Length: 166
Length: 354
Image (tube, rainbow over all chains, first blue to last red; front, side, top):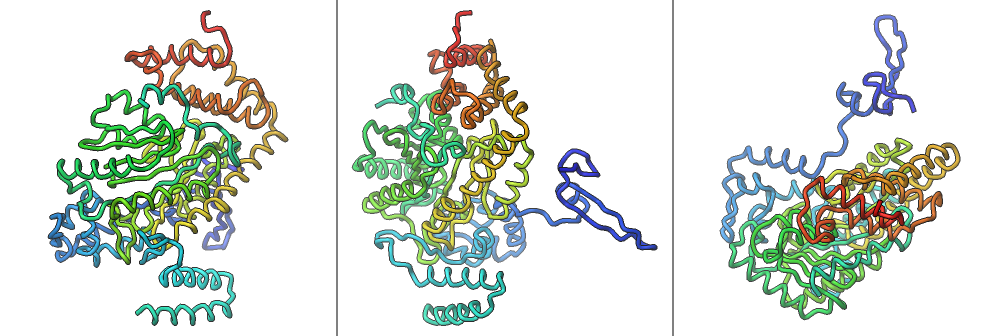
């Protein structure tokens, strides 16, 4: 593998064909991930959970309403959660639900509901939510491989199940 | 059983056997749980911590954790022994260094470790050698169900099992697999492999989990998403898709080394053996690095004088706390390096008197 033309250290994994004005001269460039990213040529890789938490929490904390939230059971404030990243008690999930939900969605690939095991439920029968989650994933996959017929059928099933749940 | 007895053996999960054991060192599944009606630990006072500790140890005490199980009150445990537990991967560094009432219950063969009052009230962990995720999943569910009959876990219809950190909410499951990837490293393909892992939303960490460096080409790969997928899906995806792919990449890299760069490969392996058999002082990092090359040589059939389980034992016993237990006293860095070198020469069959 060739080395990055810029730093000569890391392997070149980003390959570019530049058309340089004014005479449209073609120029090939081979860069490593880091140099390419520093030049703004590629987007950053996936954010870590902490980055997501931090950016999100900073944004959410901008609104006065959310910083003032406080759990009557454990006394945790949203401001405190923001600084330490840990909640104070199970009830915080209810008190902070509005501000927590988008954060949780981001940290869990867009998921909004639990679909797995539950205490004392025998833990076998799939819930409606888990069926819904599976249908949505299948639909997304169908769209990705451009199988629109299947996707349309799955969309109808998703809508049906959504009405049932509501 | 006591820690002193525990230390005589090497955990069964380090046996070096099980499916894909050329590449997969060990598998682990943990579930995060909290008891309903108590605050999470950040808001729990010492009284409440103690109550949680008592409730959980009572429940665990009623369970059969297997022969030679051991319940450890970490507050009451000397620092060196806490460090031993960290080196054996039974508790996290954070748990060893934390404060207040906390503990760990260890099951037979060190294949179960239930941490009490770590980040969550309870973290049920099960471990096995090689890639054995379905077995582990069955086992962890059984423990979860048994304990669930003894205490009520905090659970919410929408968010599932409630955890102190929202990144664990839902199933509270973390599946992690320890991989040995020396050939990907030698062929400069690690970065590419990890990029693929990140795209699959997996976390890649070093030998001792969160916040540790990758030493000796060992990496822990684990899931980050815990909500919106069933435990089965997560485990299945890991066991049948993700890990076999990593294994396949590593084996392909090993093949290419055997085919095209045999001398370079043998040189690494035999230099490692040469140093391990002859060094009179050796640091922890250097020994990890060389033992990794030795393990590679053994897994690839380039050297047969020692087996993987013995190498795993050397990995464990050359760690600082284990060396000090072996000597029965505190050792400074320089002394440790000397004792470590003595121990390695002994293990590799060279007379350590000279």
